[in-house]
Length: 182
Image 1 (cartoon, rainbow, N blue to C red):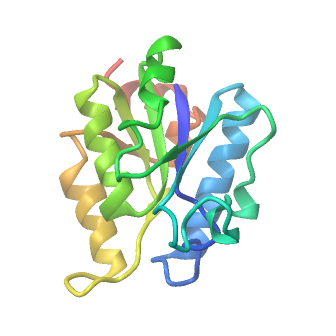
Image 2 (image 1 turned 180 degrees about the vertical axis):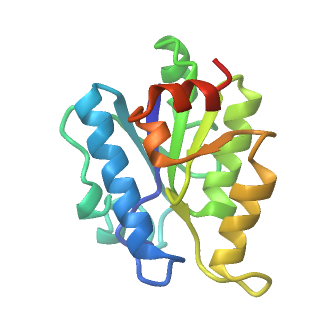
């Protein structure tokens, strides 16, 4: 299994995100636990392109200080919602024969959703730890409603196993194996 941390960039890591403090705490714990267990942590950043604020060379493009990658950790860059399209990530995971991908990051209704579904379509067993993704309010739903809709209805049992962070990081191997169908 690898832990894939998506779009946790300075520009968009703000208090406007639904349940920001819980999200920040959960992702931080997942990263620490993954490192302690020897699970590879991989980061993906989004680049909106030249002239935009979320682009290489701008301060907001960089990964949030609270989740800063270690020098040995891989960072991929994408220009579309799915982390698997034209970023090199898919090829890297296939080369390493990765079977399970735990996904954390931003935004629930954009890049997390696209990555969960595309990862599933590419044959990965997808794990979405609870409270490890979030988003902002939009004109149709609050951030909370969006989070609950995707995590509780769209992904669970269709595209992913939405389980607790404790199950994800293996604090309870019995529950983790049960949740993953092993």
